[in-house]
Image 1 (cartoon, rainbow, N blue to C red):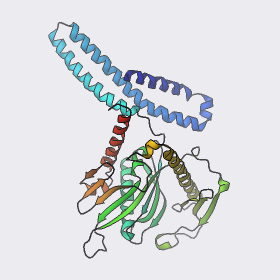
Image 2: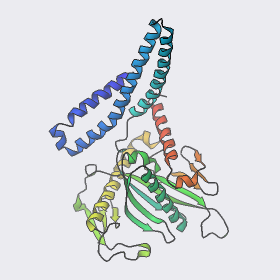
Image 3: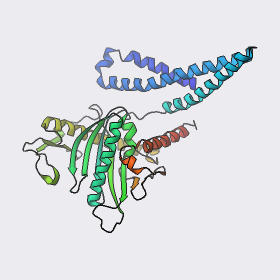
Image 4: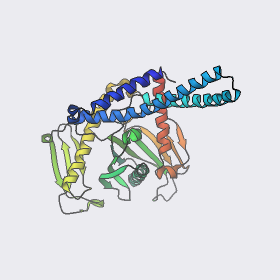
Length: 358
């Protein structure tokens, strides 16, 4: 059964490989990019498929030798080969089943991350700054690129709001389940009685939309230019380099003041605007898909309380899967891989159950 699926994948891989050299396909940028992404994903399956078929052949050879040979030493060697082949087959079957799960087409996209301070005043802004540092450290470890789009700094440190782009390999696929409300429980620096306060910040992970994902009619976008401002509203420069875009049909607003160049700020703001409009479309699709709507772990649900960072106990709890790790300093220093991996494992297990593979 699995060999048949591998053969189907190999045929599709060969088909796409031929297609991407077709001048008509190359001329259609959207189609060309889509096919190259599919080819990249299929190549992982094709490589695992080759290893799997080799292991099956080696197992068959070992079994035949054991059944036909009279040489006891060679039989013992064949038995060792049989054990190695069986283990390889079991491991590769699990890996291939995961790779066969239909991928979210947005998983390969870059992202726009929005972190906003919620309840808790200055402490919430400081925590938003902590989350920004956590995600940027994680991104640096992954060799991803980070580019700040817009910031509104808190009066006591951190951010009231920070928007930044992360680009690299499979960024949205890795980070998409980080969207939601993150809570912190700790004693604020201004607290004289030593009481633990609860504050919150909202994280939003948006797949960065390509130009062909969302077509924006620029005649429907109002463009405003203004002076960049720093903490407390003071002017950073006297030129009107900051840009605010308003999509009048939806009222969606995006702005950028991080760059000195007005042109670059407009370019970045347009990326954010396009991604926010794309998110609206994604949410509409999700609402129409009852299966996705009822999932325990969702991407893009900004209202769900997903995680608590408790300083007195040194723990981080993910409420969606009931996972608690007593490693808070390391996690806030960017080591969020364990949390992300456990969420992905949960998602993949649920999908394998749905497919009847578990």
